[in-house]
Length: 376
Image 1 (tube, rainbow, N blue to C red):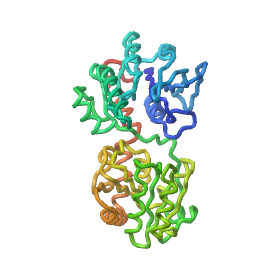
Image 2 (image 1 turned 135 degrees about the horizontal axis):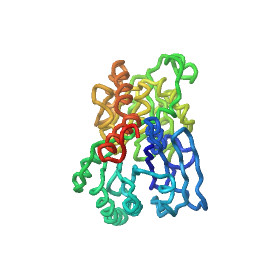
Image 3 (image 1 turned 180 degrees about the vertical axis):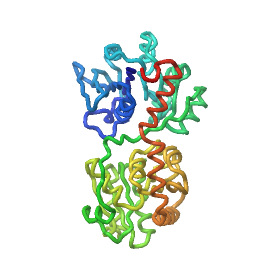
Image 4 (image 1 turned 180 degrees about the horizontal axis):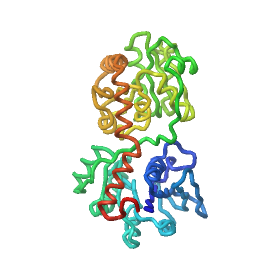
């Protein structure tokens, strides 16, 4: 049986136990669903021994002792790749400093190495740090030039090509349907359950209330919409108090609901109960909440950015806009009146942005590379 390892080289919160919607686990489940074994490795900084989880048949998660420098993980050993008899590694390494070492280990032990990248250059705010990181990342680019390398977005594909890295194609991030709950009931029934106005038009914002997400754009947008429009905001962050103050100052207190924290499984009821999902981040790399909203049929209205530009078919499965609150208000109202757009959004995710789609592409490539035969 083909065994694929998916090591996380980022040392942050995304791989911690209990974290929601871990990309590596979602892909692992999809690969297992297609008859493979999948082994996910997460760095466990400060741990003395490997811990193991088996969340579903065919999927094993290993928390391996590691050291960290900033957000870069350095595993104490790659021996688990040998112990698990791994045939190939699927690396979402981006500009992680641990990529060259992992590549050398795989090359020395005959393990097939390929990548799926969401970024190439450093996004550090400090210019000096950014310059140093981009210099160090030339080592990664040398690896990517020698091995099959996919981009998560069209923007990354263009960056790879600019850096002289042949791109195997776009392999987007997908939704892990195993963690998405079934939401029962009509929109009216859900609104009654959630305590939302049954007669209002409701826009939804889900995400960090930090500068890069531009949550304060909600204030002029809601003010520009007719009074039958309301908003639900789910998320926390540095701008939470400022958002609340601006809503109050604009006289909008009675037209919005703020939910600082909510279990991820419960957010899906709001995707089904609301009319329009808004995304203001003009640097959005992808947007998992955008995928989730569209999966539920909540029509997206988003600023142009690499992620939304790839996910949304403008005018078909949502709207892509640039401009001020008046432009957004017109777009939001148009989206809410287009029932076909909600169904198109739902189908767009099901056909293009599930992890199973990515797993199918990966296995086709591995067959072509001779890593395994179908039915092995």
